[in-house]
Image 1 (cartoon, rainbow, N blue to C red):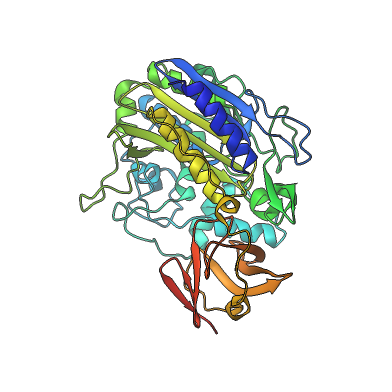
Image 2: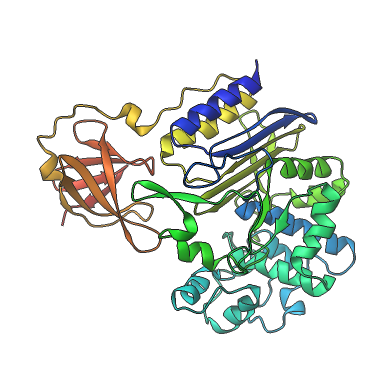
Amino acid sequence: MDKNAMMKKLTREAFEKGAFSGSWLYAENGEIVSKGAIGFCDPAGVIPVREDTLFDIGSVSKPMTATAIMLLVRDGLLTLDDAITDHFPEIPYTGVKIRHLLTHTSGLPDYIPYFMSLITEGGGIPDNSAVLPFLKDCGEPAHFAPGDGWEYCNTGYALLAMLTEKLSGMPFSEFLKKRVFEPSGMTNTLLIHRIKDGLTIENLALGQVFEDGEWKLAEQSRWKDVVAGMDGTDGAGYVKSSILDLYAWDRALRSCSLLTEEEQETMTEPVRLNNGEIGNGYGFGWGLMPDDDGNIVAFHTGYLPGYTALIKRWLDRDAVLITLCDRDHTDARAYNGFVTGLDAIISGEEPKPLIALEDIAISEPDRTNWESFCGRYEMNDEDLMIEEVMLKDGELFASVLDDLGGKEIVKLYPLGDNVFGRKAGMAKLTFREGVMMINDLPCKKL
């Protein structure tokens, strides 16, 4: 089968259905099978995305931070069983080892809510120097004893970046450049704080969100505090890279020129909790999962408002998939179809046609009972907080609480006589007498 032609066709369809704007690369056995770019770097749709365009890769930065720690271990500057309090004695949480930070098993509180409060209170954009005072003064108990549980935690990776600076004697960005990026041939990749430091980065795709019926820069949208609030931190994100540079990184790992085979095996061993259970299939900076054929895939995703990044590296065979996106997808069904379609092509199968919500919505629905669906509802679902359902110009809408605590009015599309969906998610809303079902969860009408 022609995987290149199929990926290009799928990506074009995804772009047309609001599921993807960015660049992609898939390679097998050291040969690029398919790569390309589609979409725009700006809300006006003037600057096209190119294969060498830089994106903010979000948490795809974490395996790079983990690599920095493995290099420090190689240098003899620390061990994986060092306690973090050996290096930062002011931290009031005891028993946390370096390996706990790497595997999200530390139990430490996450700094993100605190950093958000600093921004909203006008305190400026914080950097990693605010992490230690946060841990010292927040008074929040550990979420669990080190190694007893698994919880994704950006605090651990900020501490790893700070530790790298302390032991190497150089800024974390410089350490990554000299010890990770340059040895890997990542000539355009950099860790930089564009908003905090007021910098302009050439050839950077700016993250965009769809708001009020148009594309906006995320930093100028209702997400502006989130985007700015995290821009000063190191370790957990904010590396800018391209599909070409990320592929160079994959090749450096495959050739063991960056890390030895033994070091990489250590990083891709799923962490076991104190009770012997595997902790969410995570190693040192890498998520780990089997594909449909049982092959182990080391992967990481990255997300910021306007940006979505993915790298998947098959460990049992030489294959890698990289996708970088600079616009939030506007249709969850089409996006899920795009992701599963890429996996199908990689497995040698024909991808299913992409289906957006509007493709399956009823064009001429019976609106007889729609008014009875309107009203306020109790909120029982943490993933979809619908406060109120209302009619507007003959269409059904819902007031949804977002992650910022604000409200967003979204259109509901009829999928059946009393079944509806929304573009931003996969949940089905079914209205019954006095109840709105969100999938299988009942929410009573107030």
